[in-house]
Image (cartoon, rainbow, N blue to C red; front, side, top):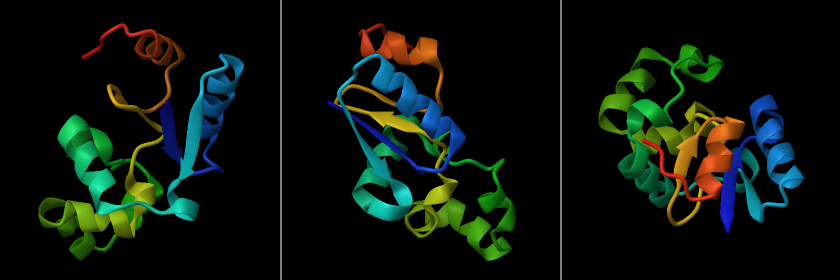
Length: 118
C-alpha cells in the first residue's frame, strides 16, 4: 500500500489524490500538519532521495525562514523539517519500493506499475 504525504490544501496534493482515486490505487493520506512527522520518516526520505530533492527552497516557507534556520538546513536538517514540515516538497509518494516527490501522472503510472525511474 502507498502513503501519500502532503498538506490537504495544497493544489498539487489534491491533483495527486484525485489521480490515485481515479486509478483505484490503494493509498493512505498523511497530512504533514495534522498528523505530524517523525524524525525517522525524514531520515528515511533523506537517505532515499537526498536533501536537495526533499527540501523545497522555492516556497514561501523557505523564504520566510530566518538566516539561523536556513543554516540549520546544513547541520540539523531533520530537526528543521520536523519543525517546518511545509519545507518538504509535496506530495511525497512512498511504499516499500518507491519514494518520490512532486506529482507527474506518467511517473506515478510507471512507478505504480513497477517501471523503474532514476
